[in-house]
Amino acid sequence: MTNSKPKAIAVLSGGLDCCVASSIYADDYDIHAITFNYGQKSADMEIKHAKMVADKLNMTHEVIDLMWLKNISNSSLTTDEDVVDVGVDDLDDLEKSNQTAKSVWVPARNTVFCSIALAYAEAMGAEIIIVGWDYEEAVTFPDNSKEYLESFNKTIEYGSFDDIQIKAPLIDMNKDDIIAKGIKIDAPINDAYSCYKGGELHCGVCESCMRRKRGFEKLGLIDEIEYEN
Image (tube, rainbow, N blue to C red; front, side, top):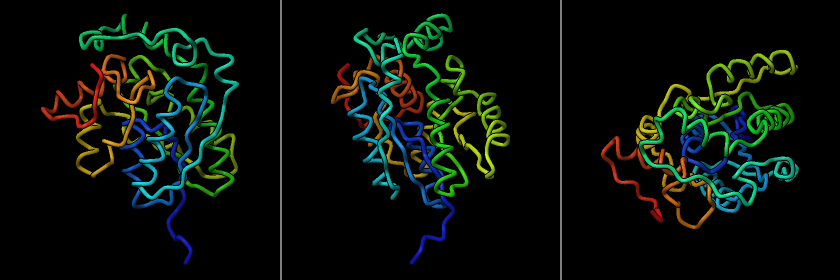
């Protein structure tokens, strides 16, 4: 029996945001998840956990290698440079957050990812591309913003024969909102991996870990994943 659901592509890093975003559409779409290996420190763990999330949500899963992106990047995510540790007070300090964001910035990463996802969507006849962009990270990452989402969807209108849209269901949410949404819809958030450093356990002190930890703390909930710090 053929699958009668419309098709979708999910950009799935294995992290909290894309896990919840994909879960929102999992019942209504036949989703093919793609995870990118661009030589980031956390590549092995991201791929492992993306596969876990994809299995839980009954999505097909594919890993795409983009090692050339590592070769042109000077990001602390892809070089020997240490990823910056942050404190909880740093998360709302715009000057410090901007510095941290620039240290982990990978050239045109989301633009590259979404362009590839669009190619997959066209080739597979998918109607939507699912991403985990959110309001909290858009403060310092321009390619997570609502303006970027609207602009890329406008680019698709001009650049594709097909009626395809990028869907970012978390675009107006902070981390605590995302966690609450994930719990409500039974998203596999305990299978998600958010750490920049790539250890078996979340480091607990990189910006990504700190934002997840703070989200749970704001809700007064216990985060079931293990942290080193």
